[in-house]
Length: 376
Image 1: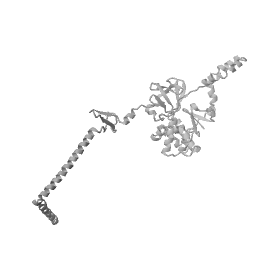
Image 2: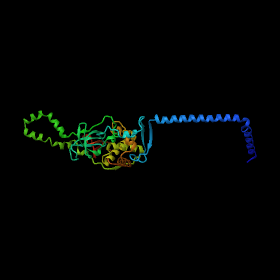
Image 3: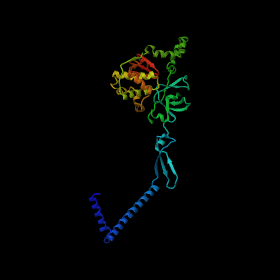
């Protein structure tokens, strides 16, 4: 210990002896000590009073406590469920209520008892069999009301069509909400019009002609009328010339490089247009988009080609954003990448239509892949 420190201690002891322990100042010291103790007691009393009030407020005024607990029965071990514990003022029984997310998951859907079609060119059958007659057609985004279902086939009504559709081409309930916007105007099935139905309508206009013709040579005219059933098979041959249908050979073009975002956009459109078509059909639709991109007619970028007015109806579909955010169907992504690598299975064709909506007589050349007709 240094001399300076020893001197400070010595002076401190002298100060205590002279001013604290000296009997001359004992009264003053007692008063100071008493005042100090009184202040301590007052402060502690105030603290106790406030603490008591807070405790009462917690017991009487707080009605809800939020408890975070690990739910190992209904949720994954890594997730947590928030429960609200409500206490009635007049009861000691706690009531546990589910949180908002649980209530939303159990909420009814607008598509309970309905379905949304997730494929293009889906046939509607008169009976629950692929051998049954086709009575209508469903396309992507159509909505129908379910009458009954056996798991494989769904008996439904949609617009003017009532029949059967395979369950693999539709989704229902909450899952359907990602394909269409709830509350929006829905599209329905298209009735299938056969050539027989067309000929049944026409005799009404020619009812007067047979009466005049039969007066001259009824024996000759009757066979002509009887053969009106046969043209049901022959008429398509006339309206769909076989000379116009061309078999397109696969060729290879110079590879095209696009950004991941552009690839995903094309793959998303392919998913919406023909996600449930054969892989060759998906490759063909991808090449239609690339042919349009190279032509420059609809724009010089993928976005301009896709969103060109009145071209790809699925570009305005409400569920396009779902695929853009979560990724397109894997086979469609593969088809786009193969087309970008150079594989082209439709030549220079830049348009396509579902077979049920195709106007074959207007195509100078076309080829059919799956349920789509590709043409120039």
